[in-house]
Image (tube, rainbow, N blue to C red; front, side, top):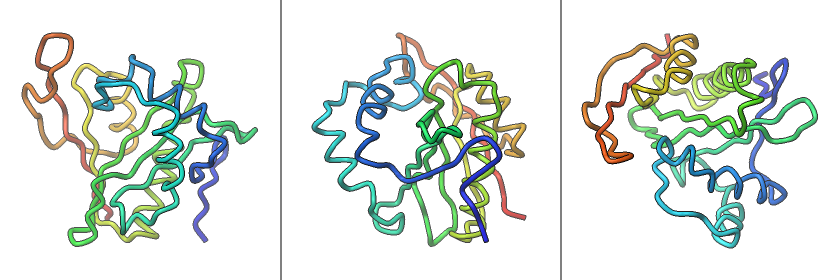
Amino acid sequence: MLSLKGQHISLRGLEPSDLDFLYELENNTEIWEISGTTAPYSKHVLALYLDNAHRDIYDVKQLRLCICNKENSPVGLIDLFDFDPKNFRAGIGIVISNKENRNQGVGAEAIQLVSDYAFKVLNLHQLYANVMESNNPSLHLFRKMGFEEVGLKKDWIFSDGKYKNEILFQKINA
């Protein structure tokens, strides 16, 4: 049986009690560049989002899971997005909320758990990730987790007054 529990972290669906965590994370301007966010979110809008977070991936084409430490406190989010059941693929994105939890194996364990879920439960053929060329920690993480660099999107992101490249990674379920 597949488990969404690893050695150091677990993945779970979003809960109403995650509102403050989500509010803090979604309004952190340091990660807006990677998330594509351009304006702050209100608690009201995020509460409405949480009210619908239970909807099925086949319906809304995305799944957002909370990455929790051993104390079940949220430390990040991992998403499957652009879920395409016809072509058996989805995008994967991850954010770890604070620097103390980064470079501790949390991201690797979360990617492994969600990849196993995607390949074994959703029967996906492939996952892909879009990583900014300047995001060295994420580039290292996806390479370490067996994602292959398959493309370069030139001038893909406009941020801080300049265009930035994005790398396309792919992992095929062998």
